[in-house]
Image (tube, rainbow, N blue to C red; front, side):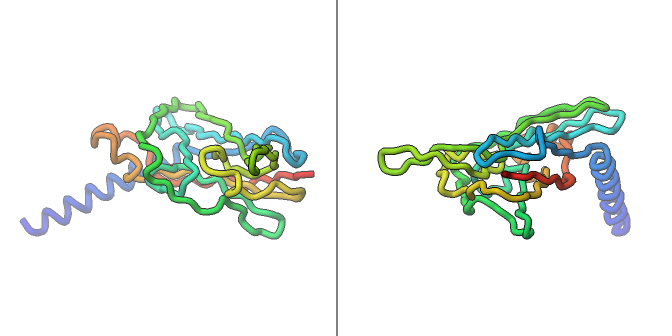
Amino acid sequence: MTGILPALLFLVFNLWSMNTAAHTEQVTLSIRTGKSSYAVGEAVWLEIGLHNTGTTTVKVLKYFRLPADDPNKNNLEIQLFDAAGNRLSRVSNVLTGRALYHPEIRPINPDETYSESLQLAGTFNRRSGRKAVKQALWVFGENPEITSVNKYPLMTPGTFKVKVIYHVYAKQLASLGETESSTIWMGELISDTIEISVI
């Protein structure tokens, strides 16, 4: 009897691993912008797509980002690097109690793509006393009005590289029932890196 339990656990783990691997190979992540060159302050939109390369429907979580570093909620990370390879980012912020999170599920049929466009950069108003001052900022798909535009780096001329990481872990599915959560794609995908010029 003592040898049966470890063997059973090994079998369950292997089946789960095979299922996870199959699902990971079934979904690909891609990113693109409308053009390769932008003026300082011009709105830059990043289109992010999950494509189902398999033969069965896959359920994924819709992209979700808060202006907060909360791995229990955010399933998308947009990374931006300058020409020297330095990563640009918002000033770190943890606002875990600010929004309740219930994951939204999106089915993707075979050979279909779920895509959304998030704003990577643009011009936003910053309060300075009683005046509103316009500033060109990198915002990483977040809404700077929820926190403060002062937390985001200035958009300046140069060459920049962008990549996206999409990840779904069990802790992000905690509010779903066990039956429902077991049908959702889990894993991590990293997009190719694209280059943007700002003039």
